[in-house]
Length: 91
Image 1: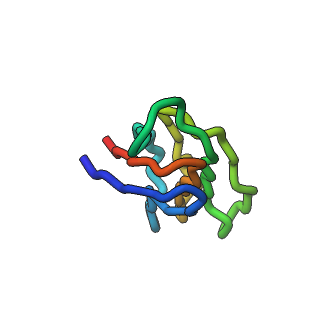
Image 2: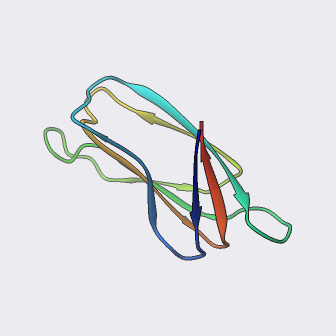
């Protein structure tokens, strides 16, 4: 398990896979560092732009996120940009 703290408005890579063509599912939890309410912000899933180029996928940040890495995603990254200070817990 890995924990990453991210400040409000900061874009931070939380997952990176290089040169792996094996499909995989990644999941992570997001919790506020202080206060109450719901987490909000964006998740950017950037698959391979090398062999078969595709645009990044933008998702709404929530308390539990599940993202898929496809067969052709040999250069794969997931970025989180929260609206509040958060902790990301990778499982």
